[in-house]
Structures are given as C-alpha cells and as structure tokens.
Image (tube, rainbow, N blue to C red):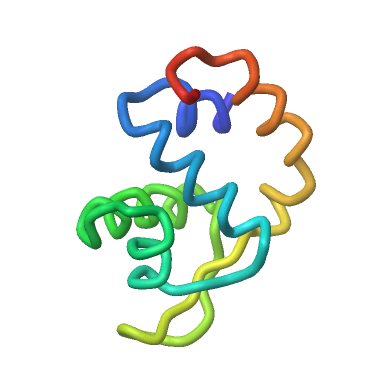
Length: 92
C-alpha cells in the first residue's frame, strides 16, 4: 500500500518513478539527478525528501555531497514497484 500511495497515488508520481528508476543504476546526489532527469533541483529535492521520509531511499554523506540509493525495503519490493508502474496510467 505504501508503494501505491507514494508512486501512483499522487500528481508527482512520475518524477518519483524517474528518480527511483535512475537510482536502480547506482547512487547519485540531487544535482546529478536534476541534470540527468532534466528536472529542477528543487523538484528533485522535494521528491527525494518524500522517498527518504517513507524509508524508500537511504543516504550517504551530508549536505551537497549527500548521495541517495535505494533502501533494502524498496530493493526487495522492486517487482511490486515495476508492476505498479506498468499498471498505473499516471506514472507513464
């Protein structure tokens, strides 16, 4: 239910899906995500905060050097995440 509410149950789900999809390939910081995904830094920061708050991302480092990576909780449920993204019209 948590994955559905964070990813498919809101208007910002497409950006959170993009962030998680990118982080499946390895960790990076907010600036890198912003550049690679073509999203405003503040938008990425807002969505990352939601993902961290829900224990779907973990952090390494601090301040501007802080990198984000998928939490074990999310990694173990990636099949659910992928299935949900496929079924949701809002996140495509």
